[in-house]
Amino acid sequence: MKKINILLSALFFAVAVGLAATASASTFTFANTDLISIPTAGTIPAAGKGDPYPSEIVVSGIPGTEEVVDLNVTLSGLSHSHSDDLYFVLEGPTGESLVLWNDAGGNYALFGVSVVFDDGATGAIPNSGPVISGSYQVSQYGSIPPPDDTFPAPNPGMGGDLSLFNGLDPNGTWKLYAYDDSFSGGGGELVDGWSLTFETQPIPEPTAAVLFAVGSFVVGGTLRRQRA
Image 1 (cartoon, rainbow, N blue to C red):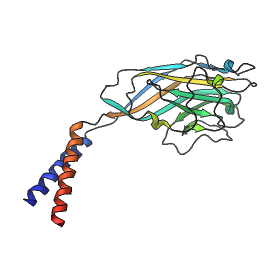
Image 2: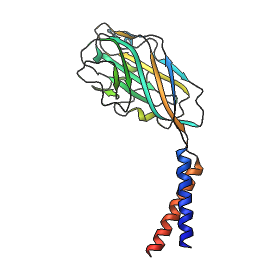
Image 3: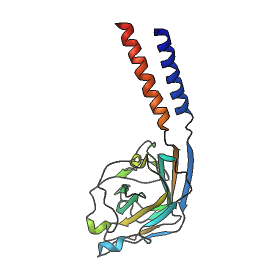
């Protein structure tokens, strides 16, 4: 009887692992290549808002059975008089929001820089700069801008990374809020817009989870009886 229990538990475990292994990742990229103008704030904080504010990407066509397991965000062709003045917020279709860039890169000018925000990058944009094209983790320095600086953008506060969006259905409208929080300087623009690259996987089937749980239960019970 013990041998049968062991064989059954092994079978349950093998089936569960096999079903989990069939989930393969897919990659999707969506872009809005329209220029985003980022004027300096001047004497009125709201004047520093990007145009358009926000810039939007509508994600559609990804199967409803898929969920986000990784997200990268690319800012393409960014030029600006002072990197440290920039503030970017990403908002997902269901309201989750994350500060991508705040007071990063020091007092350096940017000339056609393309930045990929990727949790797998080796580090954030240097606080003291300069910024060169490449991949970076979410880059947050300084303080949280006051409400009038980001209105009507969400103000998620500091902290977090792009894993915030893992597990979500990616379909829907994604928003990028660009802002210049300085009262002086020449402003800038995101010449080639921005893009989102999703890695998705099928949402785990309940059957696999159930089989795994049953197999674990049987194995645990069998081992306990053998030790007894």
